[in-house]
Each structure stands twice: as structure tokens, then as C-alpha cells.
Length: 385
Image 1 (cartoon, helix red, strand yellow):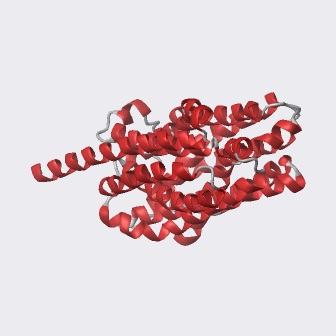
Image 2 (cartoon, rainbow, N blue to C red):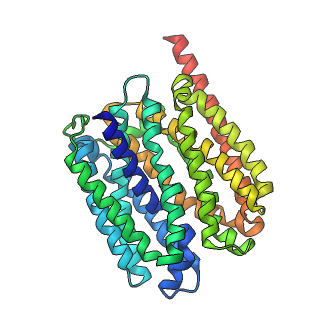
């Protein structure tokens, strides 16, 4: 029962995550199909999707605590399925943006509900391992969803991508409805994001999420534009890069038992410090396609470990307010989608993708410093007790 539930949650994350990632590599094709001149105009839908996820995660994710994670997941997946179908038939940019905003509101509940169920299903001492398995759904997003979307767009058009996502999510919705989760009990009241923010370690944990998410999306959002504008390559070439990232992300799952042993704070010191060095080095390969392929694989390994540790750190704070806390996690992560598009634009305009990588290196360094401070606080608290 637990294995099938974890597999279903993994697939759910994969499909929901795909929607937040597929638009960047196919933006030029979507713009052309809608009669737009600039691919950048389409990226406004991606940015507003991120804002909708962030707003929903703050306003509606606390409903997970009140009504139960399994029920919240069923409803949000059904709404998102409909929104993806509308995206596929959108006649203009305004309908596309409206559909993606609705999808964002649904995803803002679906992801916290999924992570909450994963944390509840995990045996004690194996939290990072089970959460890490569910987070490999992002591998499906990158290696499957994004890579296939680039190829499907070339042969069948971008609308087919969203129709396939809607079908996949519809099947996941039916499966979730039929499977009886050993779900965490509903607490019967709506928890408050502001109350959750007052819990010790929530704000530092969210800072780590911001540094990790900002560093990722600041590079990823400009990857397709970099290949097209600075390297003269095609949409399919971006697909191979995301495939390498996804493979690295998935294989990193074998590190999850180690993550449980070292704990989130110690683990994040290592991961953030390594990411900072990696980004600075990776910037020298930004115009070499073979170098990008290798770098994307390493990036996937590091990003999986960082994502697993940040989510594990937050889920352990207070199980009775897990929905509100994980809603804040999603809010910060998706605000980084919007913020990184704006903040990293200057770096991209000045130095291409290399400029984005150097900014990400700085953010990772900030993350390493915060993790070190958090580890010192944890050791002092343990010594005092």
C-alpha cells in the first residue's frame, strides 16, 4: 500500500511540475502559434503562473490541515486538469494566461498536499528518503515532461503538449480518488500562514528555499533563450539538456539515505557550498554545448539533494501545521520563479547565461552561511537541553 501510494505521489509531482517547466523551452513555438512576435511575451504566463502558485500556497494550502491532505489533493488535481485542457485550446495569450493562473492556484494546494502525504507515509528515520523518492517526480518533469515537450512541439505542435499533460493529470486524479491513503487526520481548523511564520526555524528554512529556488530558476528560465539567441540552437537541443538534468536528479535519489544520517542543516551546508563552487565553474562552460550537457547532470544531482533537505527541514517543524508550512514553502519557491525572471534579466543581458550563473553562485553562498548558522543554533540548543 505504501509503495503504491508513494509511486502515485511521485507521478503526481511529475505531472504538476511539468506544467511549471515546459513553457520555457517551447516559448518560441507558443508565441508563433498565438501570433506573437516575441517569445518573451509568452513567459509572462509562466511568471503569473508562479505568482498564482505562491498566492494559493499562502491562502489555500492551510486547507490541507483542515480537510485532510488526501481530499485537498483530489480537488486541486481535478481543477488543474481542467485548466491544462483550456491551455491547450487557448486561442490567444489572454486565455492562455487565465488558464495558467487557474492551474497555478490548483498547484499551490496540490504540491503541499502531496509533500504532506509523503512525510506522513515515511517511517521514522526515513523521512528524507521517502520525501526524496516523491521529489524524484521532478525528474519525470525534466527528463520526461520537458524533454518530450520539446520534441512533441517540433512534430505535433505545442498544444499537444498541454493535451497530454491534461490526460496524464486526469488519470492521476482518478487514481488518487480510488486509492485509500493512510492520510494524516484533518485537524478541523484552518491553520494560519502568519502563525506558522512565528514558529522557530520556519523563516530560516524558507530563506534556504529562496536561495535554492532563486539559483535554479534564474538559470533555467533563460536557458532556452540563451540557446536560441547566443548559440543559434533549436528547441530540441534544450530537450537534451533537461534530459541530462533529469537523469542526474533521479540518480541523486541514492544519496537520500545519507541525507537522513547527516540531517538537513549539516547536509545543506555541504550542498550549498558545493553549488556555489559549481555555479562559478559552470559559468565558464555556458557557451559550450558539450560542457552544458555534463554540467546539467551534476546540477541535477546537487539540486535533488538540496530540494530534499529543504523540504525535510520544513516538514519536521510542526506536523499539525504542515499544510501551512509547506504552503509557505511552495509560495517562496514559486515567487522565486517570478523574482528570478526579473532579477536575473540584468545578468543575462550583460553576460548571457554566465551572468545568471554567477548570481546563482552568490545566492548559494548565502544559503551555505545560513545553514552554518542554523547548525550552530541546533548544537547550542542540544547542549542546553
